[in-house]
Image (tube, rainbow, N blue to C red):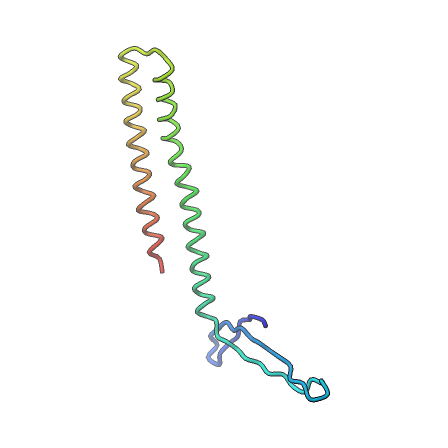
Length: 124
């Protein structure tokens, strides 16, 4: 059994899975071969499309995870500062503003991930 690319009379290419088996006579000698071919072009195209989508989604996930980490790290750092240090009212208000900004940035990144993922998941 093997797979190979073949060419039609019109020059277009297609994929074939071929099965070739020997035919033996009563003495066990090979007298001929029988071959069966199956056109697997559609399967190859589907597999190629799925692999392409997986690569795109993996790239999106990697990129987006890095975008998510920045505001999340700021939020965690600010919460840590807020919990572990005595702060003045002015500093507390500043920390809360920074938390709000980071949370809004994180929300925007998550919304962008959803949009981008939906765009790529609708690819044919």
